[in-house]
Image 1 (cartoon, one colour):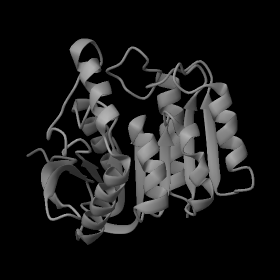
Image 2: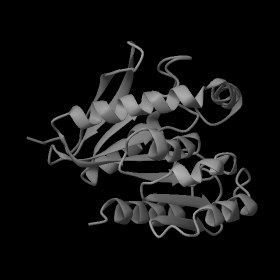
Image 3: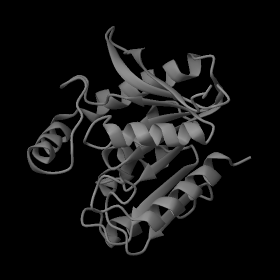
Image 4: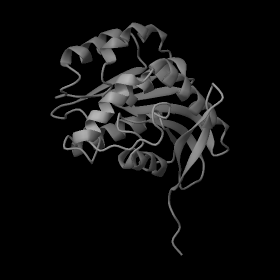
Length: 235
């Protein structure tokens, strides 16, 4: 009889304003572990994000990936070109980040309340999710944050002093959305913080962790995954 290594399900998460939304829960083989709130790109909790949730579950984490776009259109799953790309940019243009951060706080609370979740809860996100992981480190009650190619980070560095949890940034060295100047501004904003790490992957482009995109960069994806696990396993 074959035993499934990772078990997954969609669960309901209670919002701060009396509604509910879905989140994709992935449990590790051991059944219990520290928590990760995994935050999507602009393409929804699609097959790639679900696979990332399962990857971190295999690493021993209880992972919950909330549907960030639920207030606009629940259950969005998009590909990376054509009409789907246009829709993704439309959705991210409409999102209210202030409300989204409150929804992430609700997600953190829901994860902490699950019996499978033991120990710290981290936020970890990609692109739009990278920005939200950073903001969750300020406002959503996580213990640490991991931010992959957070587009528009330079627009949020005015909140750098409010970030009090250990945080890790991952940037592509050849990113068409995040410039070298934006990376340097991030370095300067946290220059006096020994608990903030910044990693840059030469030759990689925006979206390097996504195997479904042409920007996928195996070397950067592997290195960044290792750096993230080392950071999460800080003890």
